[in-house]
Length: 253
Image: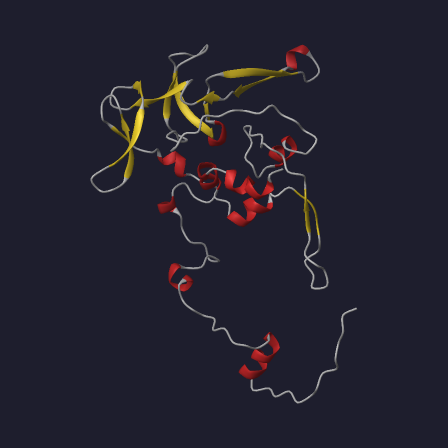
């Protein structure tokens, strides 16, 4: 795998939605085959899988086990060419209209976004049926699974002013904020609140600190002053302990 660039290939949109810290995402996207224990007597060594010329993206987030299984060294997928969108303009909660396929002309709400593939999944539209038998014919389980739609070929954003599909542009408003503007009517299409939802809060403004959270005031306080001492020496000086004993020499073999 091209492991040094996997974290860079994780787009900002799904990363922000997941609300996972960068350390967690990096740990689950490194594809490390073997790593030495984190001990003082080990020379830090990391063996990664061999680099590949491409990373295969599907509906799975890059830090999931399903994504890892798809990109194992022995799995080979065809190279997929994706036209890059400079600034992705569809978010979870947007109302869009289907432009192609069996659901052409229908409108729905975006429930999932894979920015690396220019994919959106629309709730209840462009679905396939998955039938699983539970023993008898009358007990078959039918599951409807939304399939990806390519932006901008298959879907278009709906203008809230007239409920019609439209192309959009990113522009700055009078307050200096970057907003989406309908090319047809000039109407500003706000980003839905659903796109700000994470595992921790519905919107950032609604998040309430828990008893174990560090307050903003405490976070900016400087509570540590670096000194040229070991931990033991620092504790001894704080408590007025004087150490006159000479330790034996130790060696590493």
